Image (cartoon, rainbow, N blue to C red):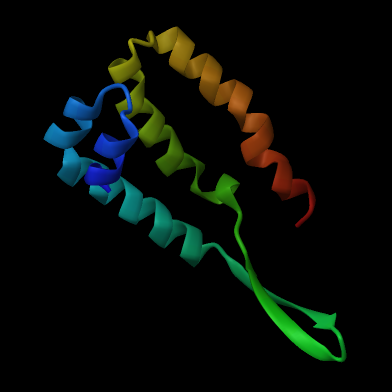
Amino acid sequence: MISEIGEFGIHGYETFRQNQEKVALLVKELMDDYQKNSIIKSTALGGSTAYYQEFYPRKSRHIINRMDDFIAPIYGLTEEQNRFLKEYDLVWRADEEKEV
């Protein structure tokens, strides 16, 4: 993952590189939580059944918030700016809850 960040030319690459174990752990924790909170659903499709996995990012918000906390200082965000982004983004993160 770190090599992809370097190739992309993302701001803060050096910080990500120096903290690659922490980044990898956060990403793994998020992906594991997505899996844990996902649901396999089915639908009729052309006379057969298709199965798909539905994810609910809102249920992993606590991990996403920790990722925000890690990234905010890299981009020079203040506590207030980071909190604003978390609250603003909450609308998107919480949206699927209405469908469940």
